[in-house]
Length: 157
Length: 202
Image (cartoon, rainbow over the protein chains, first blue to last red):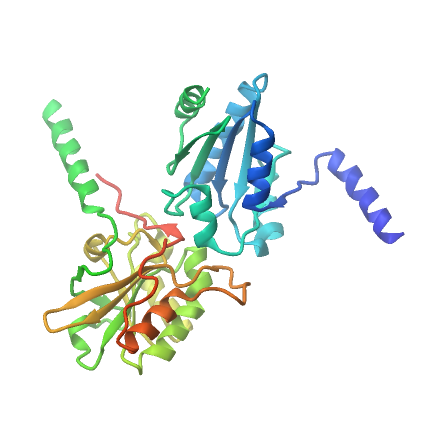
């Protein structure tokens, strides 16, 4: 009963956008999601709260998603912060940005494995962004300006 | 005016060229001569007894470096007496990362009782020579008659948050192999962490 009440209150809070949810995601789950959306362009940004160039470019990504919301476009933000700082760092930071869905934290045990599974050429450095459309993948290990983001998005169409 | 741009552009190219890829296993590792937090100049040649070194580019500020700090201390506790001491080097420019100043390094080494030298790479020459990219970034080297040879490059293990009991401990595995006169089974991994904070041009 207590749990039910808690869920009920959380739901109410979430409606009023006070509650920011971050879901854990594995690379398998990410790949499944991508394979279900062959008509969709996925822009997947890997970031962390300690990475300042990441935080500098995130507003461009959110602006870009908003400007192209009529397209079949999904922006997934995947934090690679440690799980231990979800409540202390990740959620407080995400509260400041204008995005409420598709916020994730990577749930993988071996860093060496997930890096290669995202892209063989990834050194692991942040920020990193992956563009995927119908099996086409383009990976970038650099930060983006708004214009570069739009250019790469159009390139993969 | 144009000439200034040309000079600035060529300087930028030179600077970019200085940031080489990391030394790979089998390559010669240059000697290091840097000031430590105890105000002494430390060189690899100061360790006649050593069979090799665990050279770790690390710093005060990066969450990955902090997460690995205790494991770096333990590496030195375990392997220094076996002939592979830890040499820690802060590669960051304090103008870009003020928390990584020489004074802050001294304070951290003191508060955490570092038993290994923590060196300051002022000018970032050694960092560029080794091609260190992130903190932490490890180079395990052995000593031979003519100098030092890179044997392993990359991460300490594959679990920065230290939550997976079945983690693969790359550096320990590499040094254990070298102590048995074998080559490391895994000689290269990706060093994950915060990028080196290079001095800003101009």
